Length: 95
Image (cartoon, rainbow, N blue to C red):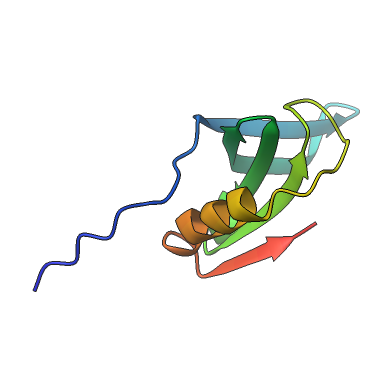
């Protein structure tokens, strides 16, 4: 049986990054993560999944634009984004 569920939204960009914190030549902290960027008509959401536990993704926003911390209400956009993430991750959490 085939299940062809279409995503209500897709990310505008998926970014794979690594953050390293070095102290006196020693690696103290290492973060390997994916950032999912979602944008839609004056609204922006970002989701981050750390690859040491790729079952969980954390959602940030919605904000009025990328790079902003001005929170806005965009319930339909948020619902569509959560639906996309829920199909790929075991748990979607908020920050």
